[in-house]
Image (tube, rainbow, N blue to C red; front, side, top):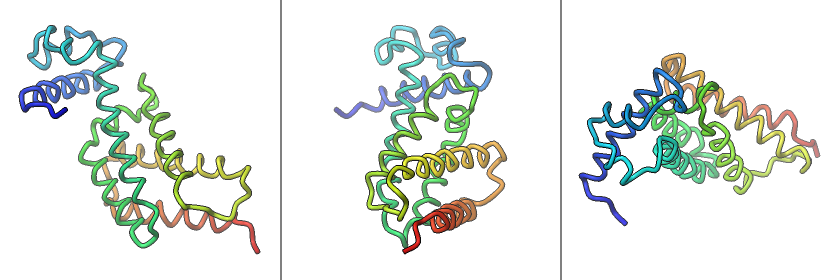
Length: 186
């Protein structure tokens, strides 16, 4: 069901409000009253869309994880990997404050874990089949994905000190070389 513009705008204000507040303190210390006052929305309106501040943040996380899943779904073709990774990094930069807050190791959300789960499901489901013993694949994929998530977090925290293209190429070369190094030689 498509939401009308007023509903979309109200939800956007609430989302922006909670993330502004999360810049200053953890989610478990933020009240509905603070979110509403910051967004200039009344509490009744808030409860029309969300049960609590955690549901509001989960809504944002869901959007970001769906988009992450879409990007990862397209990473299976070799010639486009760097370009697609670059596009994903541009998306992350455009939503940098939100990603920075959610990826923060001190965040009281499970976004980092959920992002890893989405990435693991996509990477392991794709036709990406390096010649690694099966019992080792989950560890290799986990290391790649958590390394990528931490690298992206560092890039955001460092003020995007590399272009999306440079970071995409660096990440791709690192993963590609690492996989080649541990593949079973025939």
